[in-house]
Image (cartoon, rainbow, N blue to C red; front, side, top):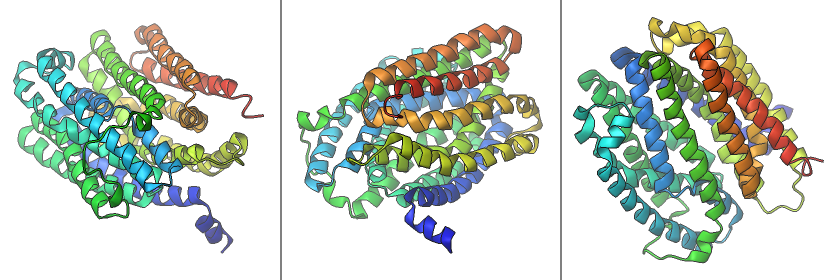
Length: 422
């Protein structure tokens, strides 16, 4: 009974409980989708589809102007519906302008982009479908951010699960019918499906009153989001550009199949990190963004780590123990070589969880200089160590570099926040 009472009173417990359950179901859906990709297109096809996903993540960030974290923070801190509506109105106006510019840039540079992503000329016409998908990417991010800031974690988890399930269905069917091109179509369908689901839910929710009914731009409302925009553009842009660069490095130094194996390891990490990311987006960032004079970073971070870390540690131990059957289940026996990467990937992700507990404070409090210091250190470490080790360790060099990166980032962010942690 004591545990049940604690669960009901503790929002973090409720977020972990609900998102954990939804995350497990999403993981099962992801298993089926991942298996289909491995069977129908193999390691090289997996690498090509990952390249496209990286591009879409970058476009999603730019089409929404990097406002995701800013909208979450502002929605958490703003109690006035009219003020929030004015903010959303201004962002939507900017978002449509950004979408048009991105679409023009994609149309202009389509041949160069397809070649950089290792797609041949036969994919040129299909690649133009991204032009249509761009506005939906930004719309999905905007609505999800508002719901997240308002702590509607059940709605967000449910919508993410439904989007993932529908996308997985299309992924399997289109891969079976059309192979790699079908898989690419399924990836492009995801933001369209997600945006429509989010919009219709939002329209029928208690937040429908803040839906903009005209294009109005208020610069004073947007100013508060500029630091978040800068952080997101730098972070997301570099993350996916570096992933593309590392995949290219592996393809050149080893081969495209090896790039697919590394991508497979990343896919497994992404699947179990869905639950962890949800906790940070739905609880940690809104909590840090609240206007609360009694807030103490040391006490709050301790509470989060005491609740979250035992669950994460247990989960990662289980993943490591069952890494071989998990790999065979997710992919095929051809991918069994990635089992040697698990120890480094899990180590990296364990330290990443602790690092993010402190790093999200930099985001919530708009500490731009500290944020950029950490990001530059993070990316530089990953790139330099990867290049130094790849000749001797092959693709294992990248996951070793990732582990070193997050250990260093944790030390650095604690140093930068030393005064707040006293």
